[in-house]
Length: 117
Length: 113
Image (tube, rainbow over all chains, first blue to last red; front, side, top):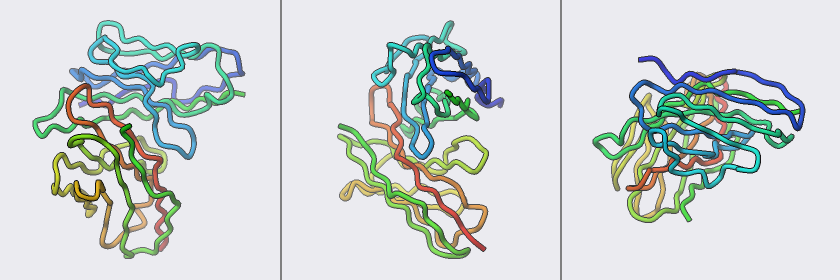
Protein backbone atom coordinates (compact mmCIF):
# COMPACT_ATOMS: atom_id res chain seq x y z
CA UNK A 1 0.00 0.00 0.00
CA UNK A 2 1.15 3.54 -0.65
CA UNK A 3 2.47 5.42 2.35
CA UNK A 4 1.64 8.84 3.74
CA UNK A 5 2.61 11.49 1.21
CA UNK A 6 3.76 14.96 2.24
CA UNK A 7 4.92 18.00 0.34
CA UNK A 8 7.01 20.01 0.11
CA UNK A 9 9.92 18.18 1.71
CA UNK A 10 11.81 21.40 2.39
CA UNK A 11 10.76 25.03 2.64
CA UNK A 12 12.73 28.13 3.54
CA UNK A 13 10.85 31.36 4.21
CA UNK A 14 11.41 34.62 6.00
CA UNK A 15 9.59 35.49 9.20
CA UNK A 16 6.12 36.93 8.73
CA UNK A 17 5.69 35.07 5.45
CA UNK A 18 3.15 32.28 5.05
CA UNK A 19 3.60 28.62 4.19
CA UNK A 20 1.35 25.63 3.56
CA UNK A 21 2.02 21.93 3.88
CA UNK A 22 0.02 19.18 2.25
CA UNK A 23 -0.59 15.61 3.38
CA UNK A 24 -2.29 12.66 1.73
CA UNK A 25 -2.84 9.82 4.21
CA UNK A 26 -3.04 6.11 3.55
CA UNK A 27 -6.23 5.28 1.73
CA UNK A 28 -9.03 4.41 4.11
CA UNK A 29 -7.35 5.76 7.24
CA UNK A 30 -9.95 7.67 9.19
CA UNK A 31 -7.61 9.54 11.51
CA UNK A 32 -5.03 12.11 10.43
CA UNK A 33 -2.51 13.88 12.64
CA UNK A 34 -0.16 16.83 12.28
CA UNK A 35 2.85 16.84 14.58
CA UNK A 36 5.56 19.47 15.01
CA UNK A 37 9.06 18.14 15.71
CA UNK A 38 11.59 20.75 16.75
CA UNK A 39 15.23 19.67 16.49
CA UNK A 40 16.21 17.54 19.47
CA UNK A 41 12.65 17.12 20.73
CA UNK A 42 9.89 14.58 20.36
CA UNK A 43 6.94 15.13 18.07
CA UNK A 44 4.25 17.39 19.51
CA UNK A 45 0.67 16.91 18.38
CA UNK A 46 -0.76 20.02 16.75
CA UNK A 47 -4.08 18.72 15.51
CA UNK A 48 -5.93 15.43 15.13
CA UNK A 49 -8.76 14.82 12.66
CA UNK A 50 -11.27 12.01 12.74
CA UNK A 51 -12.57 11.87 9.17
CA UNK A 52 -13.04 15.57 8.42
CA UNK A 53 -13.78 16.68 11.99
CA UNK A 54 -11.26 18.05 14.51
CA UNK A 55 -11.02 15.97 17.70
CA UNK A 56 -7.98 17.61 19.30
CA UNK A 57 -6.37 20.96 18.51
CA UNK A 58 -5.47 21.93 22.05
CA UNK A 59 -1.81 22.60 21.20
CA UNK A 60 -2.35 24.34 17.89
CA UNK A 61 -1.36 28.05 18.02
CA UNK A 62 -4.60 29.18 16.49
CA UNK A 63 -3.51 32.78 16.04
CA UNK A 64 -1.12 31.69 13.30
CA UNK A 65 -1.71 28.03 12.49
CA UNK A 66 -4.71 26.57 10.71
CA UNK A 67 -5.50 23.16 9.29
CA UNK A 68 -8.26 21.58 7.32
CA UNK A 69 -9.16 18.18 6.05
CA UNK A 70 -11.76 18.59 3.37
CA UNK A 71 -13.76 15.51 2.39
CA UNK A 72 -11.99 13.50 5.07
CA UNK A 73 -9.01 12.64 2.87
CA UNK A 74 -6.02 14.90 2.35
CA UNK A 75 -5.14 17.78 4.62
CA UNK A 76 -3.40 21.15 4.57
CA UNK A 77 -1.55 22.84 7.43
CA UNK A 78 -0.93 26.57 7.09
CA UNK A 79 1.22 28.97 9.05
CA UNK A 80 0.62 32.70 8.68
CA UNK A 81 2.61 34.66 9.68
CA UNK A 82 5.60 32.47 10.45
CA UNK A 83 7.92 33.09 13.36
CA UNK A 84 11.50 32.00 13.88
CA UNK A 85 10.39 29.43 16.47
CA UNK A 86 8.24 27.68 13.88
CA UNK A 87 11.39 26.20 12.34
CA UNK A 88 10.76 22.48 12.66
CA UNK A 89 9.80 19.35 10.80
CA UNK A 90 6.06 19.02 10.30
CA UNK A 91 5.01 15.42 10.36
CA UNK A 92 1.77 14.05 9.04
CA UNK A 93 0.56 10.65 10.21
CA UNK A 94 -2.55 8.57 9.72
CA UNK A 95 -4.12 5.58 11.40
CA UNK A 96 -7.01 3.25 10.69
CA UNK A 97 -9.71 2.57 13.17
CA UNK A 98 -8.26 1.12 16.34
CA UNK A 99 -6.95 -2.38 15.77
CA UNK A 100 -8.34 -5.48 17.39
CA UNK A 101 -5.74 -5.39 20.14
CA UNK A 102 -6.74 -1.85 21.00
CA UNK A 103 -3.55 -0.23 19.71
CA UNK A 104 -3.64 3.00 17.73
CA UNK A 105 -0.69 2.54 15.37
CA UNK A 106 0.42 5.58 13.40
CA UNK A 107 2.06 5.59 9.97
CA UNK A 108 4.15 8.69 9.36
CA UNK A 109 5.10 10.55 6.25
CA UNK A 110 8.67 11.69 5.57
CA UNK A 111 7.94 15.14 6.95
CA UNK A 112 8.23 18.72 5.72
CA UNK A 113 11.24 20.60 7.03
CA UNK A 114 10.58 24.33 7.54
CA UNK A 115 13.31 26.88 8.09
CA UNK A 116 12.21 30.39 9.05
CA UNK A 117 14.89 33.07 8.62
CA UNK B 1 -1.94 14.87 33.21
CA UNK B 2 -0.84 12.14 30.84
CA UNK B 3 2.85 12.17 30.00
CA UNK B 4 5.82 10.00 29.12
CA UNK B 5 9.36 10.40 30.45
CA UNK B 6 12.27 8.98 28.52
CA UNK B 7 15.96 8.88 29.33
CA UNK B 8 17.95 11.52 27.55
CA UNK B 9 20.75 10.67 25.20
CA UNK B 10 22.86 10.42 23.39
CA UNK B 11 23.74 6.84 24.16
CA UNK B 12 26.94 5.51 22.64
CA UNK B 13 27.59 1.77 22.67
CA UNK B 14 30.03 -0.59 21.08
CA UNK B 15 28.70 -3.21 18.70
CA UNK B 16 27.29 -6.28 20.49
CA UNK B 17 26.75 -4.36 23.74
CA UNK B 18 23.51 -4.62 25.72
CA UNK B 19 21.05 -1.77 25.32
CA UNK B 20 18.48 -0.38 27.74
CA UNK B 21 16.53 2.81 27.15
CA UNK B 22 14.26 3.71 30.05
CA UNK B 23 10.70 4.94 29.62
CA UNK B 24 8.06 5.63 32.23
CA UNK B 25 4.56 6.99 31.79
CA UNK B 26 1.90 8.79 33.76
CA UNK B 27 -1.64 7.95 32.71
CA UNK B 28 -4.89 6.73 34.10
CA UNK B 29 -6.27 3.37 33.17
CA UNK B 30 -4.45 1.08 30.77
CA UNK B 31 -2.83 2.99 27.93
CA UNK B 32 -1.24 1.36 24.90
CA UNK B 33 2.55 1.74 24.84
CA UNK B 34 4.85 2.04 21.85
CA UNK B 35 8.41 2.42 20.76
CA UNK B 36 8.95 4.25 17.48
CA UNK B 37 12.29 4.55 15.71
CA UNK B 38 13.69 7.17 13.35
CA UNK B 39 16.67 6.02 11.30
CA UNK B 40 18.92 8.69 9.78
CA UNK B 41 17.20 10.32 6.84
CA UNK B 42 14.00 8.33 7.30
CA UNK B 43 10.58 8.91 8.80
CA UNK B 44 9.28 7.69 12.14
CA UNK B 45 8.17 4.10 12.15
CA UNK B 46 6.69 1.73 14.69
CA UNK B 47 9.23 -0.60 16.29
CA UNK B 48 7.01 -2.45 18.77
CA UNK B 49 3.92 -2.09 20.93
CA UNK B 50 2.07 -3.51 23.94
CA UNK B 51 -1.51 -2.95 24.92
CA UNK B 52 -1.97 -4.53 28.35
CA UNK B 53 -0.05 -5.20 31.52
CA UNK B 54 2.72 -7.81 31.26
CA UNK B 55 2.53 -7.83 27.45
CA UNK B 56 5.92 -8.01 25.78
CA UNK B 57 6.38 -6.30 22.47
CA UNK B 58 9.24 -7.46 20.26
CA UNK B 59 10.69 -6.74 16.84
CA UNK B 60 14.15 -6.87 15.19
CA UNK B 61 15.68 -8.23 18.41
CA UNK B 62 14.28 -5.39 20.51
CA UNK B 63 11.92 -6.09 23.42
CA UNK B 64 9.90 -4.07 25.89
CA UNK B 65 7.58 -5.29 28.66
CA UNK B 66 4.54 -3.34 29.83
CA UNK B 67 5.00 -3.05 33.61
CA UNK B 68 1.89 -1.65 35.21
CA UNK B 69 3.30 -1.76 38.75
CA UNK B 70 6.24 0.48 37.81
CA UNK B 71 4.47 2.31 34.94
CA UNK B 72 7.43 1.50 32.72
CA UNK B 73 8.12 0.25 29.21
CA UNK B 74 11.91 0.02 28.94
CA UNK B 75 13.42 -0.88 25.57
CA UNK B 76 16.12 -3.59 25.54
CA UNK B 77 18.29 -5.38 23.03
CA UNK B 78 20.84 -7.99 23.90
CA UNK B 79 23.39 -7.22 21.20
CA UNK B 80 23.23 -3.96 19.23
CA UNK B 81 24.52 -3.50 15.70
CA UNK B 82 25.79 -0.45 13.88
CA UNK B 83 22.55 -0.50 11.88
CA UNK B 84 20.58 0.12 15.10
CA UNK B 85 21.95 3.66 15.26
CA UNK B 86 18.84 5.83 15.29
CA UNK B 87 16.60 7.94 17.53
CA UNK B 88 14.14 5.95 19.64
CA UNK B 89 10.88 7.45 20.88
CA UNK B 90 8.69 6.06 23.64
CA UNK B 91 5.00 6.86 23.17
CA UNK B 92 1.65 6.10 24.70
CA UNK B 93 -2.00 6.32 23.81
CA UNK B 94 -4.74 6.35 26.43
CA UNK B 95 -7.45 3.79 26.27
CA UNK B 96 -10.77 4.99 24.96
CA UNK B 97 -11.64 8.33 23.44
CA UNK B 98 -9.77 9.42 20.33
CA UNK B 99 -6.51 7.84 21.51
CA UNK B 100 -4.16 10.78 21.15
CA UNK B 101 -0.57 9.51 20.83
CA UNK B 102 1.98 11.35 22.99
CA UNK B 103 5.72 11.00 22.38
CA UNK B 104 8.76 11.27 24.60
CA UNK B 105 11.73 13.46 23.74
CA UNK B 106 13.62 10.69 21.98
CA UNK B 107 16.93 8.99 22.76
CA UNK B 108 19.66 9.03 20.17
CA UNK B 109 21.62 5.79 19.97
CA UNK B 110 24.98 5.58 18.28
CA UNK B 111 26.58 2.18 17.88
CA UNK B 112 30.27 2.15 17.03
CA UNK B 113 32.09 -0.79 15.45
